[in-house]
Amino acid sequence: MTGLGVLIYVTCSVPTVYGPVLLSAHTLMLLALAVLVPLLLVLGAPLQLLCLTVPRRTDGSRGPREWLDAARPALSAPARTAAILAVSLGLVYYTPLFRLVLEYWLVHQAANLYFLAVGFCFMTAVLGPGAGRPIPRGARIRTAAVLAAALLVWAVVLAAGVLPVLEPDWFIDMARTWGPPVTMDQQLAGISVLVAGFAPMALLLTALILSRPQLAPSGPPDSPDRGRHR
Image (cartoon, rainbow, N blue to C red; front, top):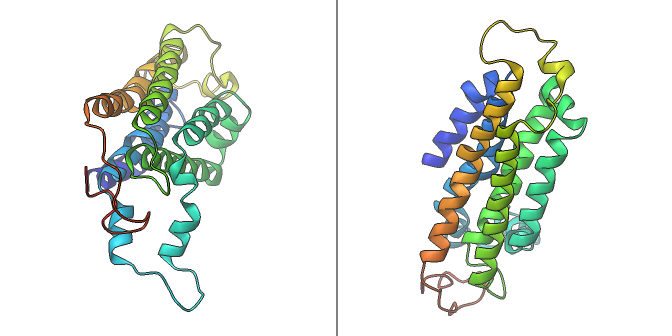
C-alpha cells in the first residue's frame, strides 16, 4: 500500500504539477517512478501472490499467468534491466526526447509508464526468486552497486553544475518570477536524484549485502513452494 500511495502522490501531486517548470521536480518524479515506487511495489510481492492465486488457463487463451510466463525473461535479468534503465534516463534527459516529454502530455505519460515498468522489472529481478536457474546473490549485489554508483555520479554532476543547462529554450524562456533560478534549480535536481534514486538503491544494496544467502528452491519455477526456504 505504501508503494501505491507514493505512486499516487508522485503522479497526481506536487512533482507532476511542477515537473514541467522545475527540473528538480521532474527528476524527483521520474526517479521515484523508476526506483522508489518499484522497490516498494516489489516488496509487496504481487507476482508471487498472483502465482499462488491465479491458475493457468487450459483453453489455449492467454490470462494473467500466461502473460507473466511470457515476461519471465525480463523479470530474471537484473544486469540487462539495470542497463536499460540507466541508458533510458540518459536518453530522456540528454536528447531532444526531453523536450517532447516536457511539451506533450501523452509523451509525458508514456515516459512515466515506461520507467515504472522498467523499474519494476529491475526490482523484481533483484529481489525476486528468479525463473529457472536462481540468480546468484553476488550478481544481484554487483548490479545494484553499479546502478547506485551511476545514480550517485549523475547526482554529483547535476549538483556541481558542471554541465550546461538542460533545455534552456524551455526553462529559461519561461521567465518565471518565483522559485529558484534556472541554474540553481538544475543543481537542486542533483538532490532529487539522491533522494529518489540513489537513497533507495543504497538501502536496497545494504539489505542485499546484509541478507543471508538463500537456499535453493525445492520446487519448479512456478511452484508455490518456490522461494519459501529463505
